[in-house]
Image 1 (cartoon, rainbow, N blue to C red):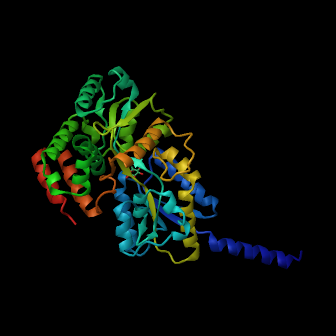
Image 2 (tube, rainbow, N blue to C red):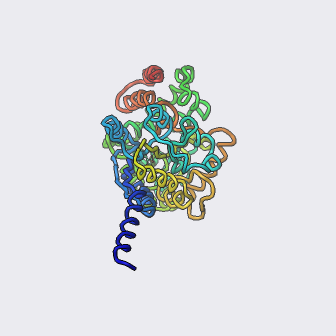
Image 3 (cartoon, helix red, strand yellow):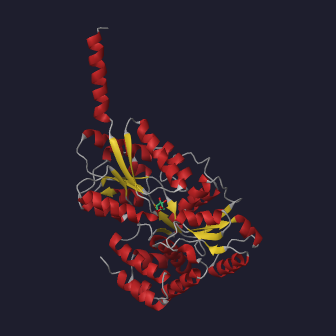
Length: 411
Ligand code: BGC
C-alpha cells in the first residue's frame, strides 16, 4: 500500500479514536482500603472502553468534604464529568440545571431497577444518574472471638446489647468502636431510632419529619439509648475515621461497631471472613427492617461529544452485570439490578439480599436518613448538627428532642 495512504489511514483512525475517547473526571469519596479497591474496578472498566479516568477523590467518610469540593467546582463553572451524588440531592442538582440526560445508556433501566431507585435517578422522566449498589446501613459488626468469649449470642435488642457491651468492657475492649464525626453519629442515631421505635416510627420521624413523632416519648427513649451508647465509646473517638473504628473491631481492640456494610468492604480487603473473624447482624431491634443507601453517579452537563460519550460509557459500565458483581464484592454492598452472578457473595451479602426483598414486601424497607436518602440536604444537615451536639455535650434528651423538632423545619 502507498505510504501516504497508510499515514492518512492511521491519522484518521487516530482522529476517530480521539473523537470518542474522553478524559472523564469522576468525583468520589472512596478512599479507604475496601472503597479504593471498589472504585479501581470502575476505573478499569472505563479505561477498557478507551477513556482516560481522571480521579477526583476527596477523602472523608460519608461525603461531606466531597460535596463541599463539588459545590466549589460547580460555582467556579468547572464541574467534573461525573460525581458521586445520591438520593434527593440528585433532584437538587438537576433542578439547578447542572445535570445532563443519559437516557441513551438507560433504555432498559426501567425494566431492571426497582421503581423507587429508578425514580431517584431521573429528573423530569430522564435519567441523569446511574446507581452502583445497595448498601444496608442498620448493621452491627462484632469481633467474633470476643463474641464467642462472651457466650456467642449476638444481641437482638438493647438490653442484650448493653449486657454484651459490659462483657466486652470486662474483656478489656473498647465495647463500641466509633468515630466521633457528625455523619457517623447520625449513622448510629438512625439505627437506634429504628431499633427503639420500629420502621413506622422511623419513617414518621426521620423521613416524613412528622412533628408528633419527633416530639414523642419514643424519640426521648431513642436519645436516652444513644446517651447510654456514648458511655461505651472511648475518649479517643473524636474525629476518628470510620474505617479505623472498623479496624479496631477487626484487630480485637474494639468489640462492635454500628456502621453500614461498606465496613464489610474493609473486612474483605483485610481477608477477614464473616462468621469466622467477625459477625454481621442487624442492629439491635432492627431484624425486620432495612435502611438502604444507594450510591450513584450523577452526570454533569457537558458540551463536547467525547465527554458525553465518556459519560454514556460510564453509565453503561456501571449498570453492567459484570461491574455490579465485582464492584459490590469489594464494596460490601449488593447489586442494584437483577441478573448478576451471586455465587461469590458471602453470608452478609446474602442476608442483605434476602432482607431487602422481604422488607420490600412486608414493609420495613426505609431510606437511610444519615446517608442522604430521606430528606433534603439542608434539613439533613440541621438535624445531623443536633445529633452531633448531643454526642459531644451533656445535652439532655429532652433538649435534644426540642432541638430536633426545630431542626426538622429547616428548608
Ligand atoms: C457511602 C458509601 C461510603 C461511606 C463511607 C456512604 O455515605 O454511601 O459508599 O463507603 O459513606 O465513606
